[in-house]
Length: 523
Image (cartoon, rainbow, N blue to C red; front, side, top):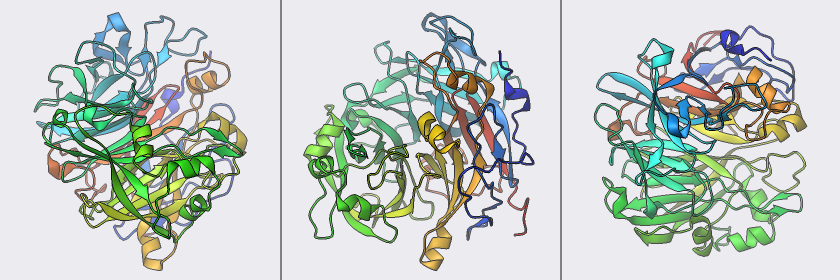
C-alpha cells in the first residue's frame, strides 16, 4: 500500500519542478494593487507521486482532509467522514473496495459571531452533502460538521459542485452539475451563528434545471449561473452546448417566490444572434475562432428563458430563446472595484490535444455591462488557452487586477501533455496599461498524492484518478451584502482576507494559503 503523503505534503517551494511543457512568464506577476508573486516555472509531470510546488511568495497548510470524521455523522446514509461515503463499506483509501470519495469542491468562507468557517459541497458519491470546517477548532477530529445531506422532503439531493453565499436570502446556494431534471440550484439556510436552520436543501425551481456549476450574486440580488454541459461529439472535438445565465428574482430575500431566468446571447459583427443551431451544425463556425481571438469584442444581450416559479430545462430553454452556447464555461466572479459591471468566467474547452476545433483549449472571458442589471453589454477574451494552459475551472480575485484561475484538465489531457494541473495569476492591469494580453504566471504546480496515484493506476472506477485543483477562494468572510465577492477590494496582506483551495480526489486535502508578496524577488 502506498504511504499517504499528508505528513510531507506541506508545499516546499525549494523542491525543483521538473520541466514539462512551455514555461510561462518568468518574471513576477505585478499588478497595480501590489499583488506580486514569484513564478513556478513548470507544471509537474504525470509520473508517480508528486509534491505540490507553490510559489515562494506563499505557503500553505492543510485545514481538512479525507477521512476526518464528521462531528455529527449520518451513519445510516454513509455520510460519516470528510471526503468519503461509507455505504459500500471498505477502507477509506487505497484498496480495490475503498469507499466512495465524495470530492469536496467549491469553498465558501464566512465569519459568524466571531467564528471562522469554511463550507463545501461534495460533488461525487451516492448523494450530495454539505460540510463546514471550523477553522478555529484546533483538534482536527472535531473540526468538520455535516450541514446538510437531505432535501426539504428528507430525500437524497444530487451531488454538489458550485456554491456561494446569498446574503439577501441568508442561505448557501448550491449547484448540482447534472442535466435536467436532476441538476439545478438548492438553498440551505443558515442562522446568525452559521449553523444550519433545519439541515435541509430546498430546490429553487425558478432558477431552472441544468448542469450549473458556477454561481454568484451581484449587488442587486441577481444570481449569475455558469453551466458546464458537454456538447455532442463532432469532427475534431465537441460542439458548444453550455450557457451563462442570470436569474432576476421577484424578491431577492425569497428565491422561492420566482423571477425571470435569462441566458446570454452573443451577436455577430453584423448584429445577428449567434444561435445554438448554427454552432452545433458547424462547430468550426468562424465566429468561434473570432470569439477566441485577443482584441475582439462582441455585443451581448440577455434573453428570457422562463418567468415564474416553475422549473424549466435550462439548456434546451436557452437554445430555444436564442442564447449562444459556449465550450463548457464553468465558474465566474465579479471584478472588485467595478460595482458589478465586469463579470469574468472560465471556459474549459475540449480537454484533448486531439481536438482541432476553434476554441478547443477554452479561455477566460469578460462580460462588461453598464450595470449589473443592464440588458446589454459586450463579451471579450481575457486570455486564451493552449495545450499547456487549459481546462480552466475555478476562479477568484486576489486583488483588483489579480485574477486567480486554476485548471481541471482531466486524466486524459494530463497523459497527453504529460503535465498535471496548475494555478495561475492573471495580471489584468498589465494588459490594460499596455493594450495587450495580460501576463499569466503560474503560482501553483499541483502534485499527485499517493491515494490519487493509486486510483489513477487502477483503483475502483467509481473514484477519480489524478488530483484536481478546485475551490480556489479569496474572501474576508463578511456574510452581509457588503461582503459579496466583488463588492470589496481584496487585501491578502491583511489577516482578514483568507485564501483556500482544495486538492480534489485522492486524499481530498483542503489547503489555506498565506501570501508573502515580497518573497523570492524584489518588488
